[in-house]
Image (tube, rainbow, N blue to C red; front, side, top):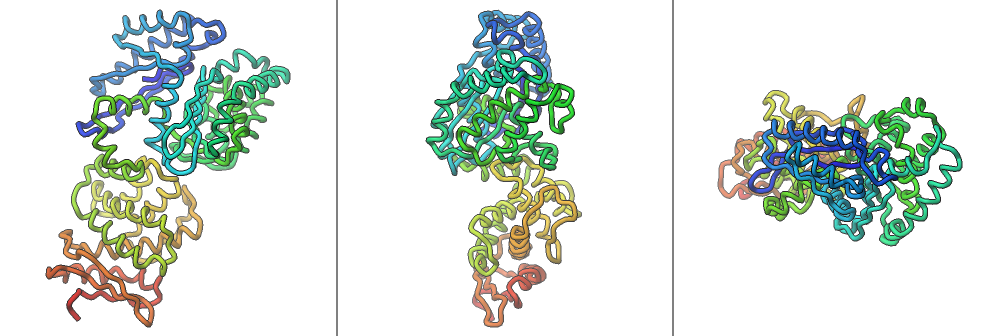
Length: 511
């Protein structure tokens, strides 16, 4: 549980002995624990009562899921309140839960630990931005690791109570808020800019609400989850201006607005805009994993359960694919062998098919996942595979990459040429559809080369024919590959069209 200034959040997970975990339930409730207390330094009796009640309800939910361990942390509102100890005592007496107050830097570290499980942060320097009710956490990430942890008393509830008066706020109060933010953010913004961080990862309810509203203004419906949705920082600036000039009723009518945040959202937008402008950000991407997931991962790591998985799958993308396979109970060597053959074909055909090195990794993951639809039903399993891939919470990938992998898996069993759907949820450019056709042609063939699921074809070599097309020489180590040759031969049509000539199969050592 994450007991914050605005909301109480909970995540319940099943942790396996090897450190794997599966999320069973999530819940959140906005209790406004810090209401009217941030400026006076005391939690009100009403707020404490609401907080204790929410924690008790969440404990009941967790226990109904079979939870045997509960870890709860409190952040800005409790750690700053003079009567925070009284609240902690009431929680212990009425729920039996020991509420641990964490300092700001630890809060920032846990936010990073949660976000890095769901986002690939190994490349360009990035900033994780979490705007809570009492504090703002700004984490500079380089090479996947946090190099600067900032926790600032600039949360949206605190800024609203201290500066913003009137509805909409007066020009004077807006000016005072902006001046305060510039002064307080100077060191953190300088550290981010010095690191060259232009990519910003948005966590917390306030930031996700801003991304949702910005996406709606662009005519993009985020769908069921905001994770991975990216907007331009300039859209946040425009949104902040709209929020600043709007009365409450107009703010409520804005698409993507969370009604529970309507009174605090402008302050959050003002903070976000100042930071995005200050570091000259080029993108803002939503991440739905943050503090509460960080608490979970930290708990697992501290108890030695997550070490084995982290060692095997340091890459968030590969770990995410492995977890989806495990979660669906999909075992067996067939998918791994098809992936191996797919990569052998890719490496030899890449240039002729106009594919990029980045497509290699996506082909491997599509191959590993191509048959998971069998868990729903053998009939039309490729349709089920597509659905499970695009809805399987594959973290570390962009929405476009997930869609590409889903489309390749969808078309691995179909005949004909893959074409864009009439109403795509995630539109892909023409260049990526060319890649989907090429990758599908490879996966179709690799699937056929393991028709018996016995790994008969151990390797494949590709030779270009003078008249176009290709000759595929199959290594079978003396095993009978008649079934594989027959099935693969039925799957060469698309590849032949792309190569401009017939694709022939030949077992090594035979004519």
